[in-house]
Image 1 (cartoon, rainbow, N blue to C red):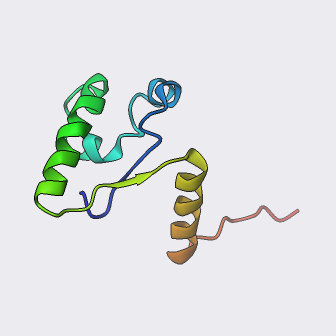
Image 2 (image 1 turned 60 degrees about the vertical axis):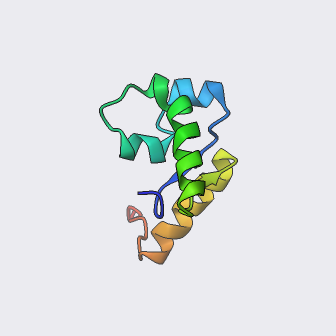
Length: 86
């Protein structure tokens, strides 16, 4: 999970509230049954352990950066939106 999942905007309290904590993707995938209100504290522990064991903890600082990465991955995987023909 740590190698392939990214948190985004973890310091943005509004986004955390609006998305129900899903901007803490790493913590969400590691602890799916834990309430999102605990993710910020869990994140600190996860980062500490990741450093200790030399495992990456990935993060996008902005929503735009996360969204851009998402669309780049969709393009890389060959996704092309189907446009309605008129």
